[in-house]
Length: 215
Ligand code: 1PW
Image (cartoon, rainbow, N blue to C red; front, side, top):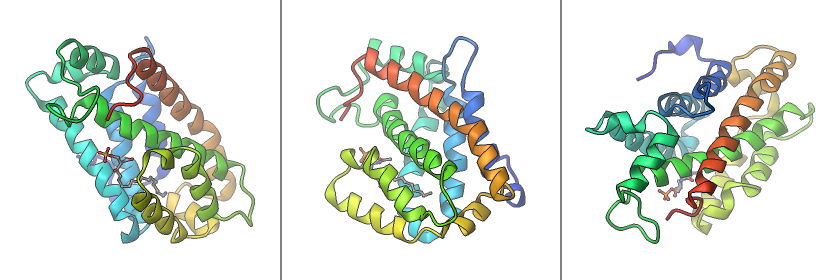
């Protein structure tokens, strides 16, 4: 569970976690990836209860990944690359419709992966935003350009309504707990490339194995 004490919570540490995902061979460590998501969930929860329906699904996905990691074949889940190989080699992935393996690591991770794209776009918008930019608009635009296409109408509606409740840019930056606006922007400049890199490598891995549309 969490190792970062409540008072010290800063989005910087969370985003930097994604740096530690990458091994020297450009593989992605499942443990660090899941830890990054734990931090993001804490951040979402700090935005208020309206975001709890969003974080609930992420918590559920994290739990599924942890169960795989702690299972009998947990060592096969050390990296996303080893997970994909193990699950495919052993027919542990539902490729056409959810059936025998509705909670495979591959399909579960894919949902987090798609959401990471949304995060990347949103952070990029925050980085280049100005004082009068609206977080709700930036968040909604990022969502519509990424994750929305995978969601049913009812979820899109609920997500978009939640985004409207986001605090304004100044308050949002404060919630990040990184410091001044300049420090937030500097942190984003540093952290976004790690998130992009992790996203790209995962995307390529899934593409190679034809897993980008897993049900
Ligand atoms: C800083 C503001 C935080 C906003 C976070 C934006 C992320 C939006 C995620 C919306 C999740 C809505 C509820 C869950 C939907 C699931 O159906 C869906 N999960 C995800 C992570 O996309 C798909 O998972 P499923 O149903 O195929 O298991």
